[in-house]
Amino acid sequence: MEATLQAQVFSVLATVALVLMVVVTGGVVYLTAADWRDRRRRKNDQQATPKRRAKS
Image 1 (cartoon, helix red, strand yellow):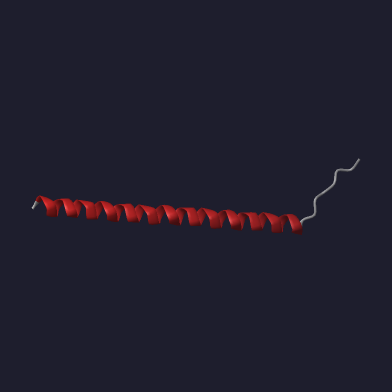
Image 2 (tube, helix red, strand yellow; image 1 turned 45 degrees about the vertical axis):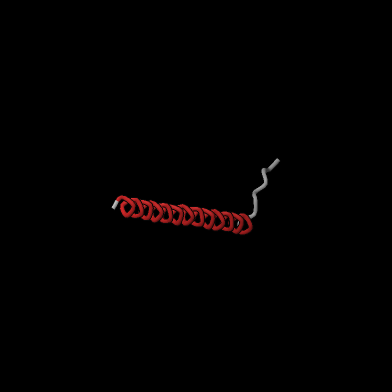
């Protein structure tokens, strides 16, 4: 009986670990995509509006 309980506990812990790995990986992918999108948007904004030069 104790072996069955131990196997169930390990199964639950393995499932929780898998879910946490998927959540963390998804978060990293989301942050990477958001950073890429923001860099692309900043680059497009810089190209669309020429820099102003200070009058001397």
